[in-house]
Length: 263
Image (cartoon, rainbow, N blue to C red; front, top):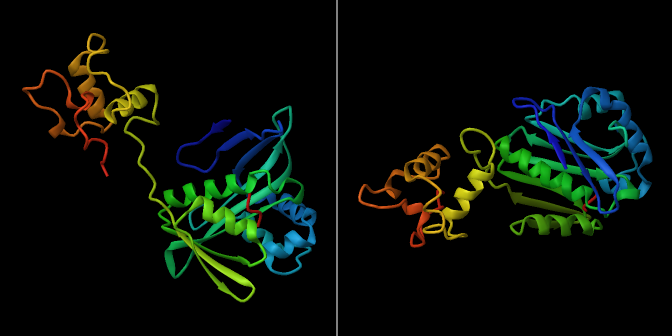
């Protein structure tokens, strides 16, 4: 998988492949994706259209296409998945996912996903929803609320799998679902986690025993400085009387608690 982020913007791409070897690209939707969205709707079967829109939907109006593609990335966030061709260019669009924040409840958003019939059941809907959950957390959304037809059992199964806390209320032909979004975890200062961060995290959580094995490899003051830089070493973990950092011993049990388509 290749991810190319642009800090401070939504100009990123994520390339991935399925076990079948088929390659795809996920990225934010853009205003110039209107034709792709219109073509995607035309390629959905009547059954998939009904599951997604609760009615037959053969085409989008111009106003609907503007709404679906001209998004702000905060209150209305949308991504699409397209086939990735051997030359690195994008082929046909195959799936789309989005969430829209509720105007009267800014901490709640409504998610939606749709995948072309030929690719349903292959994991694209799951990937989209997982991405939407992460994007929502980063945008201060605390809950997802959605509704789907009671006959759409795969959607219910997916939501239950992704969030054991999901709650469902049946109302006639519809099922109303709601589940919490875990808060986004802050990145360590200095950039994304790297090998050093992972080594320090594992040692602090006692996943590896480093007390003696690496004593000769790392200077105590250097380790302390790195832990503090990454926010992994509260001051109380260090004592002037210790001969080695408390975070690297085995006895600290309290460290590390700093507190559409459905598949």
